[in-house]
Image (cartoon, rainbow, N blue to C red):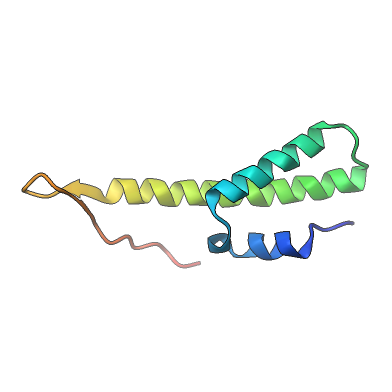
Length: 90
């Protein structure tokens, strides 16, 4: 079964290595390729697997951003402060 190119695999293996915008752009191109109807079954499966990984990266990035936003709180002087964010290490 074909696998995504090494550059894509290494980018997906380290979620911090790929910015959200790049992951989303790659996901959009995967969806376009899958919707084209021109892929062989093996290529379609490989694209699907790549898309699932990219979607996971996007979801994790959005969850991190949401946590950071939730950590913003007003101080007594009305200024917004960012509290340190403690993420669970996997």
